[in-house]
Image (cartoon, rainbow, N blue to C red; front, side, top):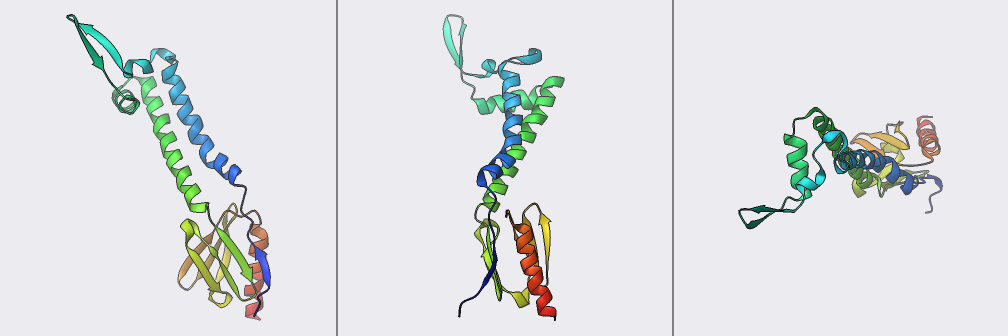
Length: 180
């Protein structure tokens, strides 16, 4: 038996999602790198934390500090006021980057199809869902491009769709028709 498809989710443009989730962290991290690379306000210059050579009593000593050690030593233990602000900017940027990567992984494979009898698709992190319309209690919009379906088993979130309103009206129409 063939089911009539009432609506099918159209994912948002992945380039815009990438830009939206990763632009803020990129800007914050660029500010920190430029601040230290250009030696603004007399901060420690980034080259003081890179591999260097020193001469002591006729012996050559090499100091090898990696960029990761620079981030820890300069941004955590340098207590000048400017450095503290840059530390906050850096770690906010890293937190925003982690959040952006999490969101990209979450929304990368979402899909939804609404038929006369069922709603099926792929939710966050690739979880496949196949719900009969009779199992759906309610539908609501849960954010930009997101739909939240309430079922007896819990909540099901489908997200990242251009045509969220079309999907919402198709599902709410099925729920309304079921009540009559």
